[in-house]
Length: 473
Image 1 (cartoon, rainbow, N blue to C red):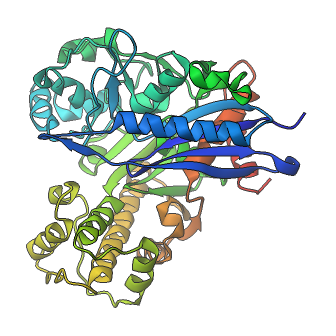
Image 2 (cartoon, one colour):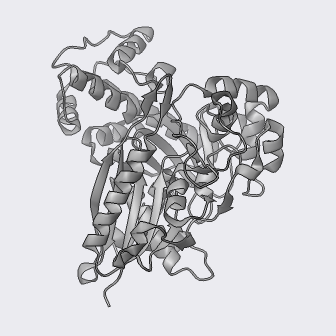
Image 3 (cartoon, one colour):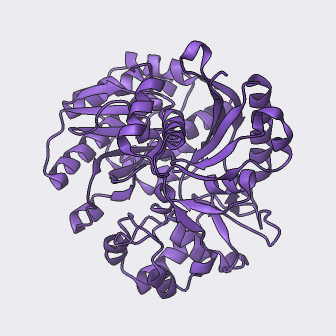
């Protein structure tokens, strides 16, 4: 019998992908079977995710997988962005269209929460950088939006797992990013829930990475390739999945996972919850199969994406590959941005916001005219490389160790200019990983779970599968 196929669903803030892993001739082949355009949508004054269209697109992608895999599909797993969640109605359907983390409703809820528990106390308790986008502040904002605070919820990737299996869980890597998990126990901090007036009963049970949560249910289960398909909670946080997809040893290296956001960090055995770590913007989240990811969250390709959206609306559509090439031909002006400036977090008139930030920092603005798009891109890439270098220098200081290389994964893996600038600014050897590293990690955890002894996956088993999927073993 041929090796059965497997499916990875990657939920992205700009696109969602359904990928199929098959083994022709005993060698792995991964194909993106279906891609769904995604992005937050405005509903009145609020920002939401188009849940119905996402689920419809995922179902279409899974049907395509069934048609392409007569050998059968052994498992499906999901990874995606963190912090957002779906509230459930009594019948298991979505209670409402889920909010996007960029919605400004959390400004007031975070301010109120800070009066109950200072940010540093929360950081020491959970290890999670207390950003206003975090799940904890979103849950606190629900009552003001008329949402039942006692309604059960599931993180976005886990909601898709629930949609497929009928079982509601919280996978550890994703739960650890909510700001509600105790560093001491690895479980929900019930005292913190009570202190903030949140319902711990509404939270799902936390399970380890690689947990098999059940069989595929619903109409898709009628297709022959899906008759024995297991649903796996792999590493549902896409950053944890992406780091699991790195085939090399991270022991003396750092990582940069670049996409809508960039994560600059390293693996650690113990959390770092000092005032210096908080001030520098670092967070501790769970890694697949144990340990922690200690990294800084940096506003990243979101800025360029919003520029491109503005230019497209103005009739100046451009492709990212062309922008990178033309930006590389531009001489640096010395101008740079604070990538974490609040105006650059928003989603309208990004070229104007960039010029506002340039003027604020004493640099000349860039005329937003046809032909100047590569100039904007060059400033963004220069600014990102400088931010990466600062983050890595802080990381070395806080961990007390020197790095000899940095692994770049995600969108940065195909951005030659950003790779070159990062090497120049950091002085480190840049090792280029997979562009779709989260997909590799998703599949690696699934495969490790399939061979786990006693139901537990290990970092070594995940890395071995990642190496095989990358053609290195």
